[in-house]
Amino acid sequence: MRFTVIAVLGAGALALAACEKSIEAPFDQGVCYAVEVGAEGEAPRFNKVADNQPQIEFCAARLEEVRLRFLRLGGNRQEIIGSYQGQFIFIDRGGVWLSKSLTGGRFNAMARTGDGRLAMPGAIQRAIDGTPIAVSSNPEPDPTAPPAP
Image (cartoon, rainbow, N blue to C red; front, side, top):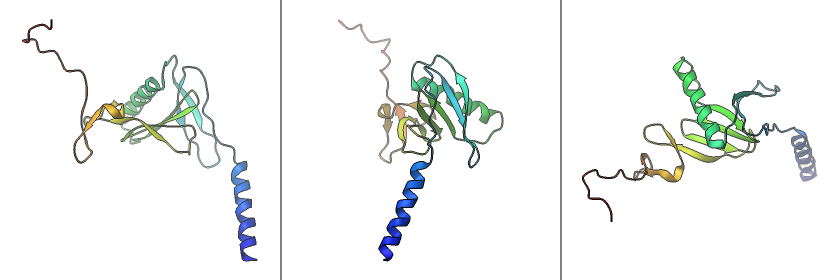
């Protein structure tokens, strides 16, 4: 009897959760948006930040610029949410995270280097304790070395 009641209540909760409308990011080609999450029950607002962005990384760079500008003006928000072609972008102190939904799982697209810049996670060299120490790049040619044959 007790199991039946719990099963019925669980099924009812799942049915209500399935009815909740998920928020979808706009899929405008090349348009980068900043997302302002509304209060409980309010729909989020999508504010256009930039047009003609060729890739999601460029949109993330524009959102990082917005975040830094607000901080320089005296703001205290360390995180910003954006969207680009149907995906949500989350920028915080750790880096850039992407997700298909506002509340779903996120995966890391860019990480912060030791000096705060954003880079692809595979390009960051880390110390033994996991802290970033540098961004790998092509070595600068030695001006005193003889030219290669």
